[in-house]
Amino acid sequence: MRRHSFDLVDYQILRELQADARKPAAEIARKFNLNERTVRNRIERMVEAGAIRLTCIVDPAFFGYVITADIFLEVELEHEQAVITALLAMPEVSYLAFGQGTQDLSIEVRFKNNEQLREFLRSVLPSIPGVHVKGYALVPRILRNIDEWMPPVEEFAEE
Image (cartoon, rainbow, N blue to C red; front, side, top):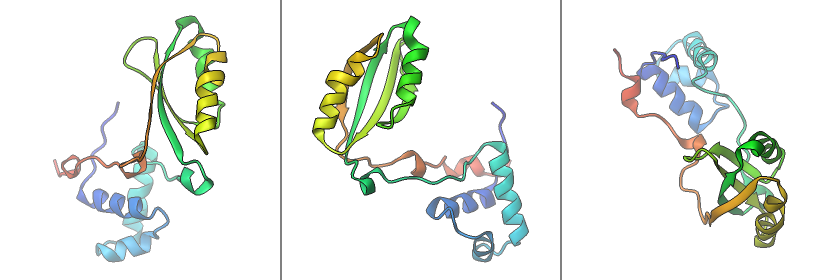
């Protein structure tokens, strides 16, 4: 993984974009007494480097998806790719990652009610060949989501 050097100006720009991704570069430039072109160039550099993605974050609760659960799966190796493909196609799955074990997958799912979650756990997942539900945890409230994460300011220090 290639390491890019970012400074405190980049950090300030990122903090502003994190608060409001639609904030104009001109407004960010005024706030920090920078040239607007400098701000635009730095944003473009961070996007091209893969350090940030400018995207839309949908709030599941707004659409009534108030039930969240983390589900831990064990997947038979010969079915792994088919299982991943099936899970990626499911709108209920908001997160999918390999787990610590060689056969483990971790998913986060969203539902409008507990009955939908129950049906997913009892019928949908067991119907996928090679999948075994190891456990799950209801998530009553997410305290920090990926769209709120930032590396520590020290990562942006001048070298």
